Image 1: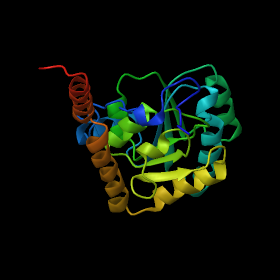
Image 2: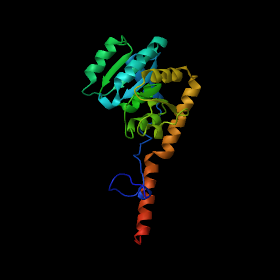
Image 3: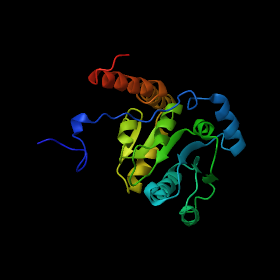
Image 4: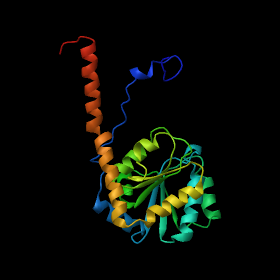
Length: 230
């Protein structure tokens, strides 16, 4: 029996997946941006976590904030930057107050300098309950950030568990906190090598150049099958 992508759709063997591409020259390591922004935010001597995304149910910020509160108990030098807005932002701020971590969490709102923010961070964290293929993970990896994320949707296609980051079950703040602490406890050289491995993987599989090549190969194959002469 043939397998189908969905009822009434085409067979799986006839489906070709071409991912979104990332401009790896925009999302790249930038020491100048890192130094400047960390100074502006007053976080030069902190371990900086970054999250970017709308405050909506799918992102499960309560999971992240509860996990981060556990992190702060063991690592008081840590801060969490969150860029974005959404209908649940007010609830997230109330939760931060209730968890007594207000001095460790920075709500940055909508930002137009995401590549710089990513450079200012030491690691990226995502706590989603469900996802598709999140571009923000591609971007963070392209900058060279090691990542801790929930194992949902296409996240494991971006983050290579144990190599470029750590995957944890969704809706489990204890597991998320332990993975974040594990990342923080790694020697800096090893943590940076994880980020470098992530950037290499993105450049090889999700760069604009690679995705354009995939489209060109598909076009050539299509024209051959249709007997089109160039």
